[in-house]
Length: 157
Image 1 (spheres, rainbow, N blue to C red):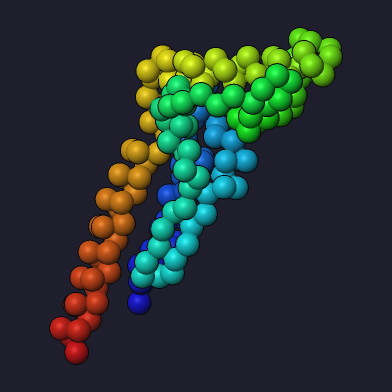
Image 2: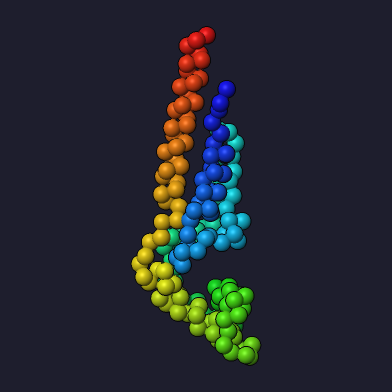
């Protein structure tokens, strides 16, 4: 008998999001983000676990609520992430370590002050909302069909 499996359905939703979803620059979502998304559950229940910042993919990162000061020559955690991101993409124009730190601090300050370009443009990118709505509708349909099959088999007995 065909049965409905919640975890399998959630796995399909996540796979579809990362297959069809496009980022702000109309590029596929990063595999590094995919590795942070996990599905937990079994045949009767389940959940999709995502990082707390996952909505940034759709809306952009807004300005920080309050500024954090790292001091001269030092980086905040966000500044360190920006530094690593810039270093990986070879985006530094400065050749000295101090200059690179200052470039990363400047970009981190600007994002903390004004938000990312995605956020400033106010452009909503539908990456997962529509896919989730469509998939949930299909899950409900599948559950109804499974329940109908079980009921019809019980009536036959």
